[in-house]
Image 1: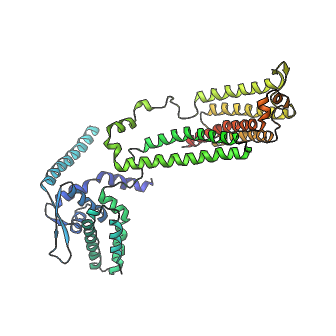
Image 2: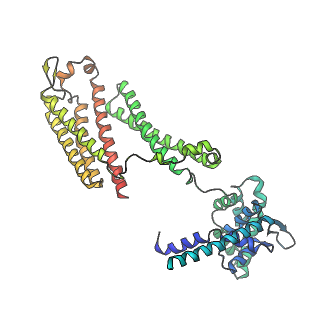
Image 3: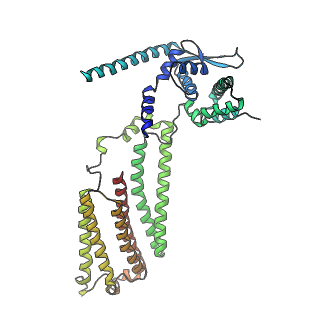
Length: 113
Length: 315
C-alpha cells in the first residue's frame, strides 16, 4: 500500500458504520435520499450516493426506517423516517459510540501514567 | 431515444429480483435526477451533468449487488482456504494417477514413445483443468446458496482446527528431504555401478545397461553425484534459490535426454540381458518407454518441487 493511502484507509475503517448511525439520527425528521446526502455532508459525514441509497434500502428492510413516496412535488420522492425499532438501535449505537470514546481516553491515560 | 439514465436503470435492475425492480428503479431515478438537478443549478450543462452523475454512481452490477446485499466475489473469504487446500490435494493426487493410467493405456496400444508421453501429459493437463473447474463451481454454488453457513455439520467438517497443522515446523527445505535425497541418490549410484561388473544372471555375469554405452552409466553417476552436492548446498542455505532450481533442471535434462535417446534407439539395455527374459525381448519397446517415463516422472517431480520451494522461499 502506498504510504499516502495508509491514513485514509485507517480513517475509512474507523468511520465504517458511522453513516448508519448518522442516518438514524438525521431521519428523526423525514427526509429523502439527496436531502439526507446534503445534510450528512454538511455535518461532516462524507458519503457517496451509490452507497447511501442502497444503505437506506437495507435499513428499511431491517425495519429501522419506514418510507413513503411523496408525490406532491414535481417528481416523486421516497421519504424515509426512523422507526420505533430504529430509535432503539440508534440509542444503543450512540451509547456504544460514547463508551468507545471513553475506552480510548482511559486507555491513553493508563498508558501515560 | 433512450436516455443514459434509462439505460443505467435497466442495467441495474437486470441484476435484481423481479419483485424489487419497480421500487428500486424509482429510487435510482430519483437519486440521479436529484443529483443532476443540483449540478444544473450550479451551472452545468444538463447532459454533461447526467454523464458525470452516472459515472459517479459506478458499475450498475456493483450498485445492484449493494442493493441486494450480495458479495462481488466468486469464492469468499469464509471458504477460500478450504477451497485452496482441497484444490492442491485433488490436483496433486488425481493428476499423476490419470497421467500414469493414460500413459499405460498408450503403452498397451503399442504406440510410439512420443505419443505415450503426449497421452500422459495431455490427460494430466485436462484432469487438472477439470478438477479445478468443478471444484470451483461447487464452492461458488455453496457460497451463493449459503449452504455452508446453514448446515452445521458441513461447516464444522470444513472448519480449520489445530489438528490440520502440517507436521513439521520448517517453512523451507526440510531435513528429512535432504537426508532422503542423499540416501536415495547414493543407493542409485551404488546400483548403477554394481550392475556393470558384479551382477550375475543364470550363472552368467552380465550388466543390465548396454556395455557399448558405458558412457551412459558414467553420465548417470555424475548427475546423481551432482544432485547430492546440490541437495547438500540447499541444506546449508536452508532454502532453495532460483539458481539451484535451474541447476537442478539442467541436471534433469542431462540425465533425461541421453536416456530417451538411447531408449528410442533400443540401445539402453544390454542385448544379452534382454535375451534372458522372453517378456522383455518381446516387449522391448514397452520396456524402453516405461524406463523413459520413470526417468521423466522421477526427475520431473524433483524439478517441479525445487521450483515451487524456490518460489516460496522468495516470498
